[in-house]
Length: 69
Image (cartoon, rainbow, N blue to C red; front, side):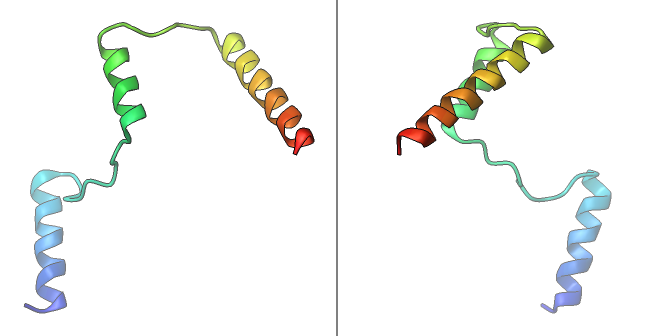
């Protein structure tokens, strides 16, 4: 089998399936758990401002942690 054959087969499959024939996204266990939680409604909802506040808090904690080291 040549490189040309492989490329042709790859492109044919993309055209047929209308998607890449690769699983480029391999979620880790934490992501899988988060997806499951979201699907069954076991998540905490927040507003955009709430999300921004969480990000600011995380950054603040990271800076404090860096100063201690």
